[in-house]
Image 1 (cartoon, rainbow, N blue to C red):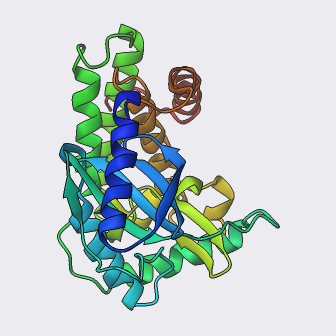
Image 2 (image 1 turned 180 degrees about the horizontal axis):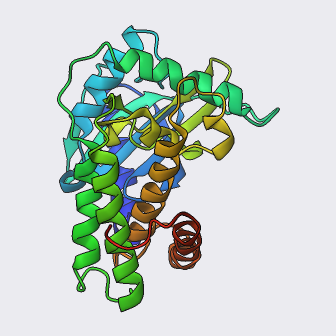
Length: 283
């Protein structure tokens, strides 16, 4: 979130919480990217704040409720208030349970895979509208093609990303394997280690696709513990996901910490992966 918006977003979240009889004397910023994540104290509620134009909060709230009812490992909404989306002063605010992090040990790949498998099992029981994973790839393709949005991207790098996104979207999309509802971005930053176990957060990226697309966001060791994985498909999904997140780093409006350095580093990783697999070019 732009620095000029942060103070106003914090004030909106505190005001909404206070209107719901939650005591707020302080707001600690836990994460700041496209949305602001705050720990409101002393009521100890987590607030997620986003500009109205950049959110799908209603979908996320409804999906979180349904997944929690099936016993899926997802973070819960704040229990002391009505589960709903609040809109004020150009922002939307949702209120969630705050989980004190457990830092005694790192999450093992086996536990990570088990939590993701349980999430996928619960998602298979739901019939909810969601975009296909290819829709997200196409958004990355449009960004690569838009020189005004990605002015610092060199022509050779622009071609590399465009060709990689196009060829792998086609290869993966034409495989014809099983697809289902996915988290969309179950990377370590969206997995909480809590006293209640491992819990996934940030469900706004849900889409439909092969489970390998979700696994591509997790550390490589996790895939070895997930049953029934198509290794070749997972490898292709990893390169596709890398191309997508590299593209976001070149958006002129990207606010990811140290994003441009990462974007440059990831371009090198894409080249190395494609050179090793013969996947370069549109195919």
